[in-house]
Image (tube, rainbow, N blue to C red; front, side, top):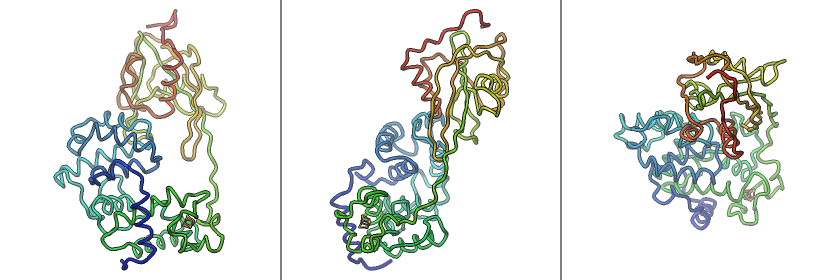
Length: 369
Ligand code: SF4
């Protein structure tokens, strides 16, 4: 740690005057800081604020979380994506209750033992929640350092990572980690943005080498762009006796423990209808017929674009029981109960389509019930 120097003073003064009014900044309660930081991994601030407020209404403390079924936690998280974050919060809450008396530890070392907490999040909770002198490095910090110090390294390289953490620790002003760390990240979010940074309003402009040498568009060193991979999938909404079949994914699977309609990837040479019939049998041993096409949804994930072909299907056999091969649980539910369960984004789009288009789920005539 160093004595405060003008760069740090400039940043903290700017943060005090310009910080956004975020709900977890009202009291800096460590529980709130923890939840906000987990939500902010992979999710935009505007969405996080909405979800954070709802979360705190439902789960205001660790005890309320621990006494809740995982399904309710996932339902509260539905739409935020990356559901392992919610499951890890629940796992961590149990550890915190058993080992720390429902308190959140302030040491980076102990925080790192909790599920879903890596070096950045541990530093953020320790510094923002407890104002401990612990550094943070996130994408905003990487970008600011690359510009201020004109770092000519690919950000993901081991050298760049080590340099960024070392720099963050060296710059940290003693006793002011809460404001300094948030100041860096706030500056990255509001001023030193990836494109078109507002250098004329930047408190760090006097120290910025990329500005001085006109290298801002080169810093950080651009990564090679990775291609988006298209994936075609098919799913079936099975109706029988006026109820819909949903199944709960296996806990360690992608979208673990979320609910879904059976389905999967369309294989080479298959059309979407054939894929639905095959997937249904492989996953449930139900033999089904396609009654009609409902819609096609598309959803973008970090590296994938998923096109989901959605069908209404009916049983081709009389009242069988499912044999689950890709799920841990199932329900037959009325259409009106779909909102009580957490679904992955693609399936939620399908549900929204059915709800908003006045889709009528009726047993097609002449089918077994
Ligand atoms: S002067 Fe511009 S490029 Fe440099 S830190 Fe500030 S906003 Fe970023």
